[in-house]
Length: 120
Image 1 (cartoon, rainbow, N blue to C red):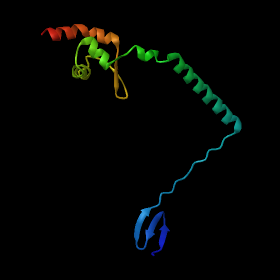
Image 2 (tube, one colour):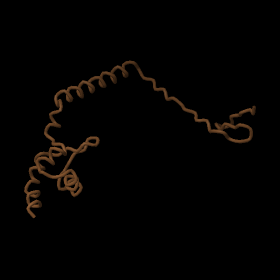
Image 3 (cartoon, helix red, strand yellow):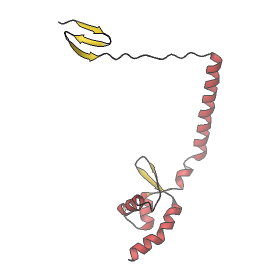
Image 4 (cartoon, helix red, strand yellow):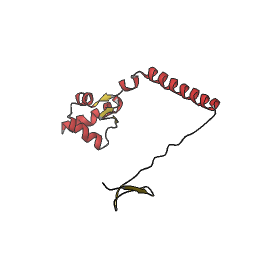
């Protein structure tokens, strides 16, 4: 068995470098108890405000938006046509994850355009 040696952070096995050793340091921050308590009280107040806002909203904001499927049904268009309208910026949208949402007012504004396209 060959001896391994560590020199300047490099791990030598015999006459070759095997793998550099990664040294991780942990940073320790100290503070007075009063400052820590104040920081935690402000954090708790922030958490309570966020929870209150979540409770107030309770999904109401999202109810105002239409899904892609709903827009396709209202305009009687395909998913691909909806994608073209979105890509060509005729219709604004909001994306959450892989789901697109549309403003009902913008969808209503597209009805004359879609009617004109379908009549041609």
